Amino acid sequence: MWWHQHNLCFRHPVEEDYSGDLEEKVSIAGSGTGRGSPAVTLVQLPSGQTVHVQGVIQTPQPSVIQSPQIQTVQVATIAETDESAESEGVIDSHKRREILSRRPSYRKILNELSSDVPGVPKIEEEKSEEEGTPPNIATMAVPTSIYQTSTGQYTATGDMPTYQIRAPTTALPQGVVMAASPGSLHSPQQLAEEATRKRELRLMKNREAAKECRRRKKEYVKCLESRVAVLEVQNKKLIEELETLKDICSPKPD
DNA sequence: ACCTCTAAACGTCACCGAAG
DNA sequence: CTTCGGTGACGTTTAGAGGT
Image (cartoon, rainbow, N blue to C red; front, top):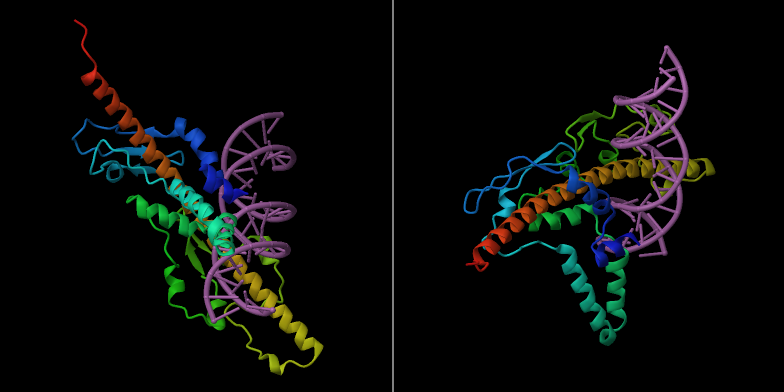
């Protein structure tokens, strides 16, 4: 399973897709300066996006590798629970299954990443315009008329593609949802209407959820790309440092 | 101008876990 | 148990690039 791979092997489809060519595509604009200088490095991602990597590389202890390694930690945790499961029984096996079977949401993963890497932006809990709206049927049926995509573009829901327009015309007008109490439904026709209404509502919500999910996924992928770029630079600097130390420490031939 | 290909975005369905 | 939100999978549409 996808998430199994993510946990146990530190492999991730996204990483698999991107890490390979990043090695070639990531270009380092202002390559690392000497030790001690304020190493501000511009890293260009394959997408053209540039990343400043200063904050990440500057660690309190310059010679110690401090990679977040979130996945490794997860593996260790799982291993521990595996051992204790023998003594603790069913409860832990349930938990284990939970960990293994269900992949955390992109928001969770990215937020974990961002807590380890200062340069990584957090995904907002909710979009600001949604925050103010109470969980009330009448208001939540209104899709945002304009929202900003992850690429910074603004999309109006008004200019929908044709296949969206031909969505069932029985859909209620946006923002208006009939509040029919179950007790007031008698005839089969009313029941059918109620079922249709519920279906339309569910579809609409799922539509929005899918959009949001894709947005988060894109953000997550971007985050991983930046992280890869950052780690590449960090790696390069460490190699350079190692070479320098080797030069210093190697016995000189007489 | 017209195809053909491809990447990106979308809508829907099915499934799962969390919450009530 | 039911409801709801998140997400993978799948099929569809669209826009843009490249070839004829």
